[in-house]
Image (cartoon, rainbow, N blue to C red; front, side):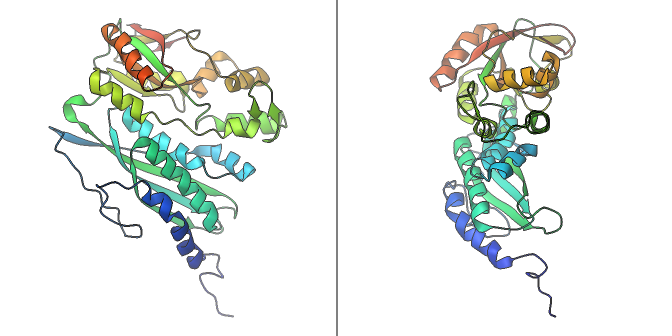
Length: 341
């Protein structure tokens, strides 16, 4: 018996069909800086640096984590790509980076063209929300390493910032104000705890309708991560933003100190914003402490932004004009790089 790549589990023809199915999604993100068509060995992007004195590239990479399990359970794959883009572009935003382009990596046990096209459609949607071009990617079929109906997803973003305008947090001082942009839900962190509680302990299903959510459990859990590029770029164009923090894995306690100087604390008023119902549900059903919740989840805050007291009101006006329900959630006080809740 002759053995072929296809008989070993890798269907090259299906891979080519997947490329054809995703082509329109990818091209919808192209702009005048993209020089290569889909299918080249590398993505080519023309770097326009005329608006920058000392251009610096800023990059970020991330995946979606076990939130992918929800996509598998629901057989819904058209939004998970936005999560991947968001986790990368929101990170580079924290240093003032304007996203330029994005690349994705999808690995699966069995390649199905329509499913890959749905995933890439979500990636393309995220790129459009971020003003970023999707200039390349890799789809790998790996039988024996992944289950046939499962896949992993990761991405890589590159942005640009002028060196004098890099946001580091080094000038944060006591008296500064902490603003918050709301999350769209759990985003892409804490899903191992969520799945353990909801599906193993509570024995719930993604199709269960939950009154306090106004939608099914699956719908609220699979809500894609919010992308903050446009409102934040609008803000830093007019305001001297001192620090930006993406609230991801590790919640408040791990992420906020990353932008604080050694001599200050971030004092947060947890009554200053409405914690979304999904977090209250998780906390009550799991009997989880406040500290554990704020160490694991974003608790309704996707981005924390530090500005001077003098700039706080104007910052809120700019963010509200961008459609953001911005809240003042705390202040910077003297301390030793801690978060006080």
